[in-house]
Image 1 (cartoon, each protein chain N blue to C red):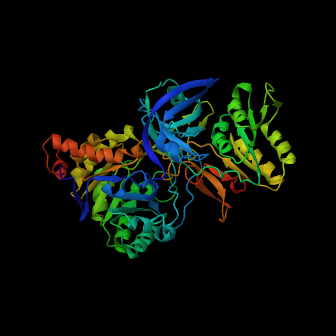
Image 2: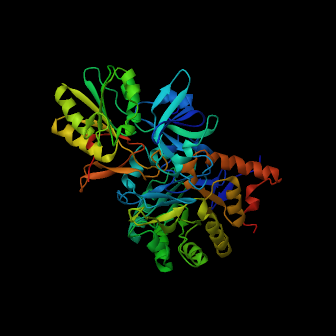
Image 3: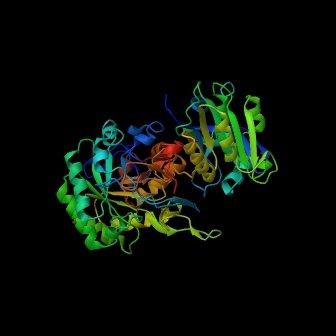
Length: 263
Length: 304
């Protein structure tokens, strides 16, 4: 059984969730079967021949019975704009599942998920596969940037929201909620996905509390399988300058907070 | 079923399709997606005498019809390449000729890698001398755009090994034929071309370079006509085997390169968008030859 495959995946649904965020459901049973929380698929954009590179998307959810694999995306450029116009029956070429994925929360520790923006999509399967529903902290600029609240609630997760503009939940940063949650939890296990500034703040908070966290990094990629060294990040290493470049696509996208070398 | 085998200075490939250096890692990265034994040859990512961290990020930018890259030849170094199970030991287990791309910052360093590989030659079909990388400060293109320097590097590598040598040429010269002849006169058994074309892209909103290195090598379908022209000119200059590459995506592209004078064809950037294209190109060449009643692929080499 190969660890990753390239398949043609027909679109089942492609619908707007809110604001510029969309959910894309694909028929990709073979990848769905292999997928672990925190892994991603590398998607070729059809009919956009002058855009030659694939786009990586975290696997949001899989349904093993129907073979459905879902991703969540935000329109940020020409590629995702094009993706939003595709319809059921259109076929996408997928490579996956790629990357290492999160470690599942252990039974004896309370899981805390920290998600920023569409980072909540990358952490949903982790919550779904947790031995007990984790605490989920979601942050965004505004209430329209908070995704998947109902999905996490349906899993029984305790959900807390933070928005920069105060339009929903805590008026401030999601990392402030993390500090509170860690203080209230004995032996927490922290997993996060979101913008780099958020992940850096998560790293500082867990370090202060004497614990570690697993962070999923978002990075533009070319090959997605470790061949091209385009998506590298600095990881602490026994080198003269204290770090070495690691590939987000294959050594990550999930790294321990204590491993990342923040500039 | 046409005969797709080609001969490159005594190295027989089962078909003309070769992975281009830097786009296929060390083979293992793609081994669960592509049956490696179907490829004509695998060219691995450039190996230097020392581990190399490569360039700062961002290292790549997608541009119209292709991409810019300035990876900067990040690699684990020759010691790890020889001993780590993911590199040469893995490649030795694969039934496919392996070309090892080599580079250094000085002439002596090129010779050093070559002599280490000479001692480890089991499983290595040829060395490809990279004198054309546009993205490193020392070495690379500095050697490939000066006839005297190019000759020194190739001669030094020639003295260090009896393995077949491929010299990878830069397109960043006015008369490619001179460089092809220079490499052959210095002892290269073959040449490969083209490497990427130096380019630049600027984000006009943030007024920043889209690649941290400022300049990067352009690859992808947009460079193909430049590459075909240079393969054609190199073919007029030398008789040795040529591995032609630059923007190849389809079987028709590969056939075009062979008609221009290539004995084998490199596929690079297209692998990023579609790993399976390697097999599609091989199968497509076979079908094209059948459709045209051509029994042997070698008969189309340099017909223009």
